[in-house]
Figure 1 (tube, helix red, strand yellow):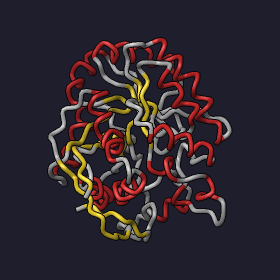
Figure 2 (cartoon, rainbow, N blue to C red):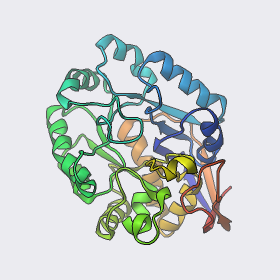
Figure 3 (cartoon, one colour):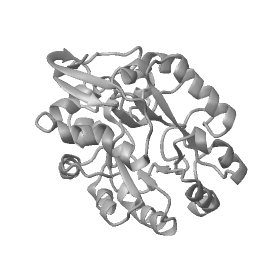
Length: 322
């Protein structure tokens, strides 16, 4: 048996309404808490929207802490003072770069006054770090922006989300205020699973899954137990209909702990750091303690969750969440 202490998903999409209702339990049966993404329609970018969304999540869950994010815009100091205790971070989406990001940031310089306030209030910045260049180069091209933000705001904790290239992970040792989350799909898959045979739209995501070399370097960082590397699923549910239209996102929530248990099978101490301890220590998180147990028993991933096809649909795993 594997016993995990207070596992936390540091990057989660739940959507709203029927989709939220269908997918939420797949997270709450495996995690004590999760950082909730704000790129809804309309975005979560004001107090009323934030409170209503949090209430919707809490009404459908038990023993679970949603850590709320705001969608980046040009906030006033009064707005952030009012909301600082209610949020975990503010999420920066470059305009149009991913799902529901049309109202994202067009110029980084325009939000510098907001970043100054966040730095003083100790509100972390969470970033979808991609340029608008060639798809395989977008994360690497964003590297200079991460470096500039880290230098210009040395007291601001900056999270490089869903890192898919080691080029960004190397920055963790150069800048004290940079952190990273890693997804299950970037940890285990390559572009071959997306387009190496028949096109698999269910593994299409942004940033796109990359090369075997990228995967190997990511795995090395994770297995090293690096204290600034944390698990963030970026589990992003879309209906099959929308996936066939090209929606970006991998719905990994149902299979996360069984898949990670196999990956970390001989190193549960590092598993615990990646899935919880690093996040708690890096951000002084105060999450009600909760044990989540896995037993060594064959378990099959669901083929469908409502109208959504999950990652590894139908695959057999050696571990099962109790």
